[in-house]
Image 1 (cartoon, rainbow, N blue to C red):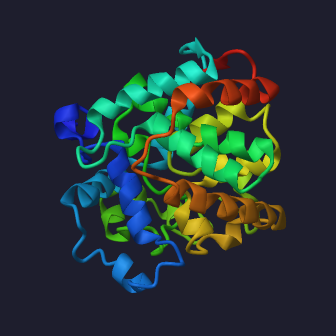
Image 2 (cartoon, rainbow, N blue to C red; image 1 turned 180 degrees about the vertical axis):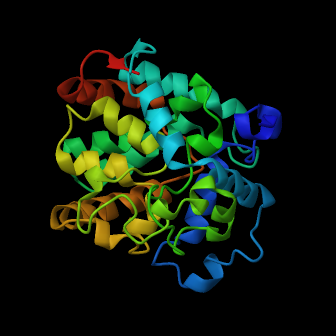
Length: 292
């Protein structure tokens, strides 16, 4: 494989993790914004940044069923290091050096802004903590994972690709597209089997879900595990793989989604002032150290 595929920084398809997040906001605008139509926001014939298109070309080529299984086996042993949650957030924040040069928002600031927006609306404390944790799985980048295996809209592997996935044309280069077993409507799954039995493309959602799955309410865990599954919770794709419980829980995913997308503010939160509150909140739910 080339350096581009293995994640060599010289071949990174995005200038920084924030670039993907900004593209998601463009694709899924705040419904209160009336100055552009949905069709204008989802204009992929002329995307604003070629790096986004390149990111998805690599992502859709490399995210095979076997790749997902291998990454789960590699990373879900959760034995790389132990860190407090706050230390892990600050560790993640070193990614700011590789972030989009057009924004000053760091990863830690995004987590705090998301959590603070949820708190301001009076939601339960577990919901606030979920906002604080939702992107913590991006520490995978600091363990050597390339961006295309950390961020990006997630989608099921092991069954046919939906045309609701961004840039579906790039799946023609994915080896699974030539495997008849994986290219039927259900593929290896059963009708209504439930998302817990479905393998999504590998990334930070599944990773952070696995790290904290024993500690948060189920509603929060759905938010963590599926917040990047835009084909499902925003486009209505793959409903036939879901069961009634998934549909019920996805109402919470949709409730969380605007806080993730629209809470960014150029004014950085005061992490020093906020730290005591969040460390106390973390201690109520999580162990002193997370296994990463």
